[in-house]
Image 1 (spheres, rainbow, N blue to C red):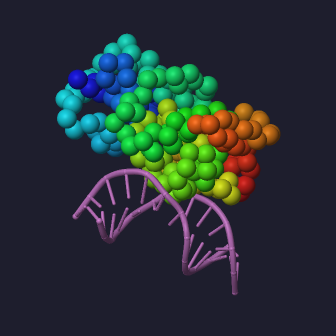
Image 2 (cartoon, rainbow, N blue to C red; image 1 turned 90 degrees about the vertical axis):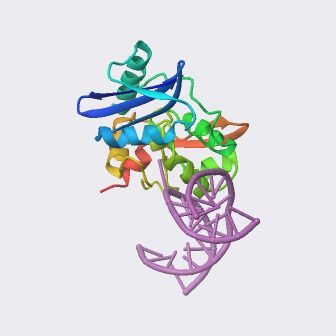
Amino acid sequence: MIEIYSQNIDGVWFSVACNQGQIVSSSFGLSQQLILGNILANIPFNVPFQVFHEPSFFAKHVLSSLKRIYGGQNVNTNFSLAFARLPAYTQKVLKATAEIPLGYVTSYGLIAKAVGGGPRAVGNVMAANPFAPIVPCHRVVKSNFTIGGYGGGLKTKLELLCREKRGFSNSKELEVSGRQLQVFPVEYVLRNLA
DNA sequence: TGCAAACCATAAC
DNA sequence: GTTATGGTTTGCA
């Protein structure tokens, strides 16, 4: 049984679907209806689900983590995510994205170089990210450090990145599935907006 | 700058 | 199988 919880914290809706301690999907946004739609679209069709009003202990923990991620705080996102039902390539891209640290961004193209495939394919995975904002797809931008797109709206993406600003000044290299992935301070994005 | 072409995994048909 | 679809990138005028 998949359990679905949603909660409004300080004017923003957060929602999570979980199954025995594993997160099947998560989402956030201004409209409860919209994010519930996201959640429902991402749960498998052959598993029964139920929507709860009172969060369980685990759900409470997840929801408050979502809220803290939304607030730009450093959060341990070591949750067990339901990757298994996703296509192999999608898993690789999401896992690479999950490695991008707070305060940094990278580009669609660089992720593509690290995990294979092309930039547009990476963009497609981002657009369908079932685990927002746990898998920080908002930290992926265009190669020229303009913002790119975002499911929850560009304004939201920008606000998230602003709150994640940590004053780093140098790029750095991550190791992702055996290859290097370069990440850059989020300031690179924020600086070229007027 | 702006436009066209190459790009590549998915989902839908 | 085939096609349509992007949260892209690069090259060239």
